[in-house]
Length: 407
Image 1: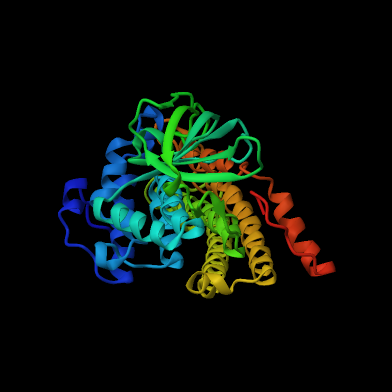
Image 2 (image 1 turned 135 degrees about the vertical axis):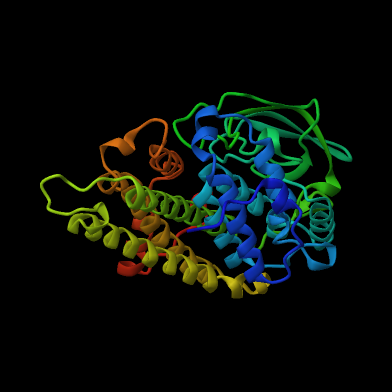
């Protein structure tokens, strides 16, 4: 049996980890804190101020930050595994953390060297938590050029992490052009009005509602990647999609693992054997053993593929200027493959846990359905059929995915 879960204050008082292994242990402790009341918090749907404070106090928000500024200095494979751990305890908080990592890294994706250094130093030292309003399907945020400043105006229907963030990544289109501009701005300002309109069946605590942007002013010097109002593109700028898709992969696999482990504990302690099956314990039922064996085997296989694909990208992130369109496309195909697998495994797992827990496990009090609701809600972000198509086109005709907001 596990020791009692630590409290949030106990986790916050622990010394800062110094190795990747210790950081993963820290993520597991955070997960254990979150899973103790995940069902209750899912029902309440309250803004997760305390949960984000836990991510900050535990240091998890700084794992991609430079060591010289107090960060862990870890790379993406470790960050993905941390997302997976946290998501096993609470899918919503796992998503918030994964998106935070993406937006923290966004400066490195498109910023100038000076911007990268400044953002990473400030964000790491101050343990900023990032939100973002960059939904690419919304094109109604226009940016006006007002001399030394640019001004954002418009709306986004999704702005994950809104009310719990210290800073928000904004994206819009420069008026009269097709030029997209990203900027990091303080979240607490009158020109940003976050809406309380996130009312979906899953991922209830992600604060993913809309936002109205009414005159957010940013110096041109803070427009990510711009010098003298000009942006010089490179292939690495298109890595946002493979990176966020791998965040999704690990989010889904984490939720699936949380579902399986929660179900297994319930089966061990509560599920009754079928009265006509001849077994005295549910854990001896042949169909229960078979189902758990199948589900765990598929999950382990998907996790192994996810870790392999993440490791393959290390050479890209370590030498971003050397990235070619060919290498980027081949990596995206691998990401597409694991995204399809993770989606299928997570949806199947979170649905089938009821087969091995029994009728009483459908109690609303337990909220075991939250695992499926969370995966189902988020996995509709982009159709998985298009991911499988990317793989098929590459295998059959050597066609590489063309960089878009989704591929």
